[in-house]
Amino acid sequence: MTIRKPATSVTAPILEPNINDLAKRLRFTPQEGRIWLDDQRMLLMHASSLQALRQELIDSLGQERAHGLISRIGYQAGAHDAEVTKKVRAGSDSYSHFLGGPQLVSLEGLVRCEPIALDIDVSAGRYFGAFHLVDCAEAEVHVKTYGIATEGVCWMLTGYACGYTSTFMGRPILWREFECRATGHEKCRVVGQPVEDWDDAARDDLRFLQIGELLNWSGSDPSHRMVGPKIRERRPDTPANSLGLVGISTGFNAVCHKIQKAAPTDATVLFLGESGVGKEIFSKTVHRVSKRSEGPFVAVNCAAIPEALMESELFGVTKGGFTGATASRPGRFERANGGTLFLDEIGTLSWASQGKLLRALQEGEIERVGDTVVRKVDVRVIAATNVDLGEAVKRGEFRQDLFYRINVFPIKVPPLRERRDDIPLMMDWFLQRFCKKYDKVITGFRERGVDALRNYRWPGNIREMENMIERAVILADDGGALDLCHLFTAGEELDASSFVLRPNGNIDSNSESDEEEDAVASTQATLSSLADTEVESLRRAVAEAKGNLALAARLLGISRPTMAYRLRKYGLR
Image (cartoon, rainbow, N blue to C red; front, side):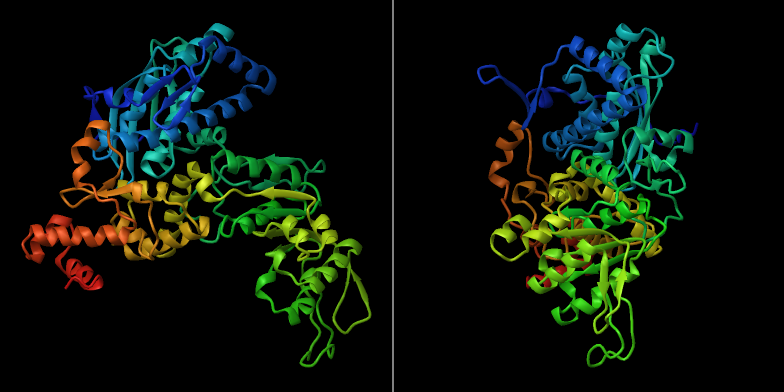
């Protein structure tokens, strides 16, 4: 078992910050029947209820599946608590900021966390943590039900640690339990480090979190059973065009569950969702885990083909079929024979094209343009659209019979802003992918970069994130970390509540404890975009340096040429 114990880690005793700033965020409103932790609703639950729930899950699902479900519940809680600490402890040092998570889980009554060793460098992507879990409620209720266990049972807490630390670091961090009160130890002991620092045996624990792609369909298995969600191990030799389908959020797992149900069949699948949410990637996954995985996957963007060419593109053409047809060629249906045809942006098809497509789907046969031969095709159709086809039918823009033909198994893919728990995983995936593509070493994301990516609204969804991180990798210096100046460079507008300008010129989160808000209220500028923030920062630095650009650059932590360039860029010089 590999544990990378860092030479620079902070070892006991570790001074824990005062918990009062977090405790004040816990509010009880009994007259309304609500408990709040910051802006998130909480529940006060009997330990005996947790005991009954665990027993029910283990006895009905089996220990393996129950372990995974409980771990994922913990992961979600940890990811959400990371958002609370980012608000409450903005501007604190990394250790005080991070220790908000262990303090929150103690505040929530699950366990008392004692740090043993801690090494954090967000911008370098370095993390190592070891904690004792004292008087763990999860281990206690397990022993009451099943007696002494043979392995660790703190599934919710290790899941919590994975979710909290992955969100904090902006990259996947895996925690494992090495000692457990349920196995007879005095205290539970957990260790966390980046996924790639564990050996293969340890990384197998990722299966409980289901972080990864749906990969394998055993086509040779006569029963055609789904092998199930496999973990996408990101290796150095991962090809640049591998599917970046990663996630842990409820929305992501709901889509994966539906794909598992639909993939073994030949049912038509209709992916619904905003542009850029990854509908084509999910479609490729359906094909890849289906019985047709050995056959071709042919994609056609219906919006990109002129109406005059649509029929020949879909069904093919015979030589002389129309002016300019100098050779016969098969269409997309024929090329997809025995495999899958993906029709993207199907809502843009004209009424005439919809009718021709409907016949091909109903009869399973096509005729090339200019030909009289009817050709049978064996094609599984997957469609996708960002249009509400039901409303389009009501408006008379989409054929009702075609809608019912393709709406056999609809799958709604949620936008990225509703899958925020997936953002740290996607950040790491795209970073590794583009570092390999451009042969660069980028250590990770600076903390404020992580915060910005988590808080951004992502109107362009996953496609926008992919483009942003690719651009950032190109802009960043080799061996450095990605910061705001690398990420938000194309006019993206950040939420004004996410950032404020501090008196020292730094850009930080616009969330402080109550006392801090009162103290700095007169100095906070509510800014509408990163560009506005940068302009104001430049002006203040130049004013403070009394026009000395070299000094102003040092105040902002940038080089003098960079300072001069940005002043020219905004017309400040």
